[in-house]
Structures are given as structure tokens and as C-alpha cells.
Image (cartoon, rainbow, N blue to C red):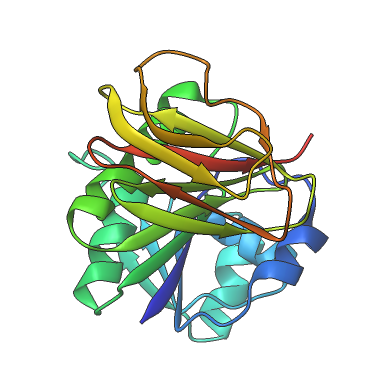
Length: 211
């Protein structure tokens, strides 16, 4: 099962999201993200959260369409996005995409990127998508599809990464040890329609970026 979680972060180009929201078995909205769903003109399968950020007309619209609501108290130990992840896993999702999880709140943005790591450790494939970024994570091997000239960055998280090999990129590496908190992996470039990143130890974010 493949699920999409929509959070209440920044979305500037709704047409972009209309074009990428395809092929999901379940669409889950985190609270005020239902405003985004309304503007994109899609119906979520469920809206989860304390429900204090939804516009009144949007809430009534989804009530009229018999969309399921799952209300949680405003004071809780998890963000609405993480509660949505719990639901997605509960219904059997093996792949989860996120939109609306990045924005002006750096605390929320960093926490949401870190959620990719927790999903990786649970054997669930995940990525974050917005108008300028497609963020993946791996502790083994991953292929990224795109177009020649796309920017690909590889960023270690929480520790040095050993045995990095990059193929299909302008600046290849072979069994290279990439230090944590260095910029060596930033702004590589696709030379074909896909690339492959593999590592022997550690964990990296792989970001396909657009200016």
C-alpha cells in the first residue's frame, strides 16, 4: 500500500501538486492540510489532528462529502504529521510520500525530514516532495530518476558515511568516506536519466533539487 500524507506547511503552486498526486491508495491530511487538499481539489480519505486549523468552509465541505475525521487533543506528545504516519502504518502502508511538510518553521521542517529516518528503520520507503525538492533517504542503495542536468545532493545524517559510491553523476565517487557536516556531496549533476547511490555504512539524505 502506498499512502500520501499532506501536512500544513508551505505550498505555493497548487498546479504542481495536482500533477503529482497520482496512484495513492490512501490520502491522509494532517489537520489544516485539509485546506491544501481543498485548494488542490482532491478528497482525502481521512483528516487527522486537533482540527483547529481547518477553515470553516473547508471543514463543512468535507463533512458534506462524508470524509472521515479523526480528532486528537491539541496537547499531545506527537505532531499531527507523526500521528498521520501511525495511521498510515496501521492500515498497512509500505510506502509513504509527504507533501506540505516543509515551510517557514524550521523546527517542524527538520523534525519532518528526520521522520524519514524513523520510517527507514521500520522498513518503510518514504520521500518528501515540494516544488523545489524531492528528498529521499537510504542506508544502503538507491536509484534516483530524473533528467540530465538535474541537481543531486548527498548529505550524511547523524554520522560519517563510509563507502559511498556514486554512479550516473558528473562527479562520481568510488568507495569514498563522506564526513558528517561537510559539503562535499552538495550539487552533483545527473549525466543521464538516473543515478545510483550506494553506501556501506551510515545514512544519507539524497535530494533532487530545483532552483
